[in-house]
Image 1: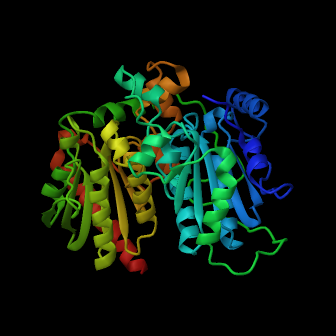
Image 2: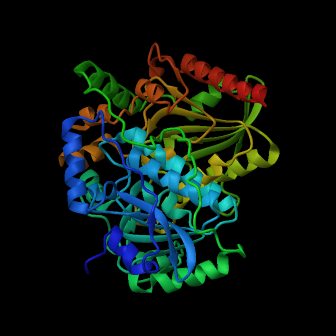
Image 3: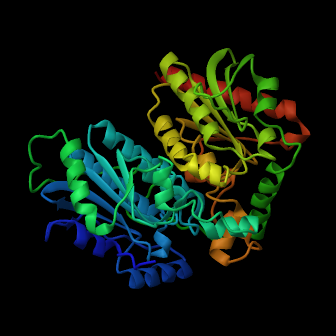
Length: 496
């Protein structure tokens, strides 16, 4: 495979000479543990950038644009909180200055060292991109080698036009993690840009040397602004969205043995075959339920249950991941299209939306990749962040990866005490960071996947106690969660 240009090299090759102006502010590393700070310093020395993305303003064949460019040499292009904050600030500034946005990704996804707090920033980036597009501004995406994980399954799949480097690895899950988890390599030739073109997932494969003229043509056709942007514009003050630290990194004390045991007990508890799921929640807590079926476009996936329901006398649309049907068949793209049918229905009818998260992870297969699983996750994030109705997300059990994140961005988030959320199965995250699976419990705790940790970090709004654990009292558990759903819906209705 030919050598791929880094972030600064790509900018030099694509934009008009001397037109790039950086928007990046220095990033503070205060408060980090020494090992992580050393890893960041080594990454910066190797990559020639202070983080995994650079942002700024430039011109491409005379067209003013905002740029977000990934640098894979910086910790695999992974997106932590500081990188996410930089991206959000750039997208918001581009929107305020009425600039088209060009994103050139190169990333393995979420930064495993930062875990769940970094993972949920994909929602914040996607929301900023959706707002940019809603303002009538073009968003072009160039997927570089490699682009996988949360980046591809969020803002990397939301472009008005999406192209990729020829021969680039582009996919939902990186092949190393897949092989670690499944003991066999991912099918060859699937996660390649040309295959994505053939399956209608992206628009074209374009070499870097042809990117500028292609982007300029697209900008000329997509742009509706008739007057050029001013040469000098005052910086836009960007308040950090939920989960994003615009100026630096998050740091937490090393977890105790007791905390590690508590978090890992939640992971193993939610994996029990007798843990109640969405069906038990509806059976024991809903006033009324009318099941719905399929996407309405000839697809159905039992990994998601769609229904009209009522909690505490409040009608709603419910889209819930059904653990019963994910044991033998993982949740695929059609499941998320079915959930998105529910999102659209709720918005059209003015009904609250309730989503239930309970998944060991989305489907990792040729069928899922070629069925645009990553794009469906991104579009689910976009749909949920733009809903005009009350919304409640319930983290009922397992919350693994992009399939879980897709149903998370409600206005209020409830977690069961043993519910958890992680960018990968803990064993997969351990494989990336430690090259083994023996550190899964330690890393899960460091990643702050547990409900108490997420409550402290502002990822969830309320935790429903499990005393006893849900499998020991399914009716009582369901009743408590149902009551909290009704309360959260009512609070939003009262707020108007």
